[in-house]
Image 1: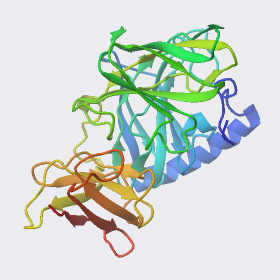
Image 2 (image 1 turned 30 degrees about the vertical axis):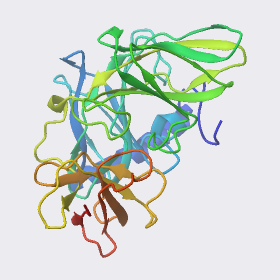
Image 3 (image 1 turned 90 degrees about the vertical axis):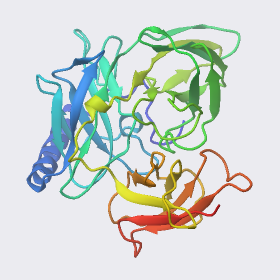
Amino acid sequence: MSPGVRTGQDRAGPPAGRFLLLLLLATFASARAEAAGQGVRGRASHGGVLVEGLVVSAYPYRPGTFGPLTGVDPIARTETATDGTYRLALPPGRYVMDGLKKAPGNSDGRPETGDLYCLYAGSPVVVGPATWTAVGLNLVQVPREARESAPRSRIRGTITLDGQPAVKVYLYLYADPASGFRGPARLLKPVPSGAFQVRTPPGTYYLVARQRARGGPYGPVAIGDRFNFYPRNPVTVGAGESVTVEIPLVERLSQLEEDPDAYQGVAVTVVGPDGTPRPGFYVLAYPSPTRSGPPLATGPATGTDGLTHLPVEPGRPVFLRARRSLGGPLGEGEPFGDGALGAGGGDRAVIRVTE
């Protein structure tokens, strides 16, 4: 297991004294951010019903961490109102977001069977100065997990949608969350009819399921896509142990994120050699000019106006690449173009692609 990664057995939260100190610090940071008019806001829903009393938490993000999955303490928390809305003031930065509502009789700080939970698919989200970012939380009820002896270690189970086996889904198995669940997984498995079985060495794993409306295994989670982290991540598998899980998919709904005044990200326009807009290109942001390794962020495909928005902080120096496809190196003859943001590159970019 990677240093600093907590297993599902030790995510119960900090001691009472430390928690009080964290709460005071979070309250101070949130008050300053509220005065500046910035943070995240949105709605929470379960099965189409808006949820009151959900605890929404924001965890500071830095590479190699992923909020509650790596033991990061929340910087701020709030609860959803009667109409399922919430507003959480935050300093500028990147955050992993989640929402948890405990079922009667449950008291552990981690998700338990019967709780309502969402680890936001778009994490880490970006909060810019004096702007609000829309984050919609589509919740699932945390399913049971079963364990039994087996000749070989394995994880098996079902990916479901509305309680029924989902079709044409991809299962991703990660050894740790250091990549932010971007880039190559330890295992990528097509799941044609919901049921899956994976033989694994004993260890700790993180499960993610994705079903993109446009098809394919790669790309950011867009409105209309179905997605979920396994709510009880991580899964620890012992020698000669079989773990049975259910991963319930949820759809990323525009209704939970409708906010015309919210921060959309840094604007990037892709044009062809003749200067006209090019639709259908993905723009990836990298921390170095080599543009290699997992990207910091990926924008949705450009529209007919050639425009997309990248979820990166305004002014942050990043190196851009626009390309037609996602996953793996550029294909032979694939059109692409490079650009930059911040550090002299400005907060808007135009990328001219070769064809």
